[in-house]
Image 1 (cartoon, rainbow, N blue to C red):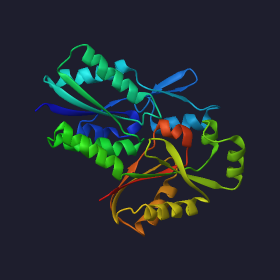
Image 2 (cartoon, one colour; image 1 turned 180 degrees about the vertical axis):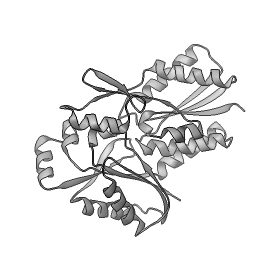
Image 3 (cartoon, rainbow, N blue to C red; image 1 turned 30 degrees about the vertical axis):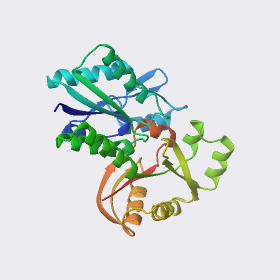
Image 4 (cartoon, rainbow, N blue to C red; image 1 turned 45 degrees about the vertical axis):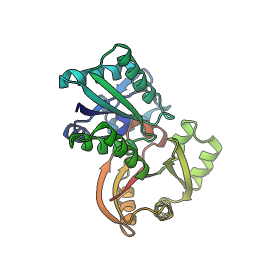
Length: 289
């Protein structure tokens, strides 16, 4: 049985130490502020990105990897392993970015070249940030345990369906700048201290769930939404924030008062989602234990 390798992109926001431990390969998107272009997660850290985001007069432009970027990554894995390699390539929701399509084109280029030492399966995560990460980690752990490609693909789908996602946005300014919200609505919402609660829907879009006045009330509403959705009593959570550790801790304590948190890991929201949400965001990714 050929070896299965896992590839993702930088929008999965998986820390380097975890990628190295599990053998996860990454292809990065690019982020441009004016004439300055950076490689996401490589030449620009999340902290540096948010420094630039706050100071920039306009939102940065994010750009997907090229098909050649993916082709080179896939071919390097075959060269490294010295045998036939099966690659599962898991990427940012195809409705948010052309990254998935670039990977699909790279797969076609390899097939057109007649390279029978590489087999590529491209997966649309229909998610972002740890919504991708939960699928990638499940896949990598299964690959390291010697599972087949078919078994791993089933685990990826299971991880996607079981992961509930809630983003709590601190300011409406970035949603307005990114064209996701009209100017009048943004101004009124900011004056009234409205905090939108967002998720990623079943079609892979960032979608509003509710909007609540005040951060603590919005966090309480997230716990209510968990109950309404029938979240398992015992859960694994990933908490992410951008320059809002107090908010992340408050949300964790509110969830812990109602649920048995079996494990909790801190995560960082990267450049793509962060472009439209800005600093102050708190997010939680929930999976059954």
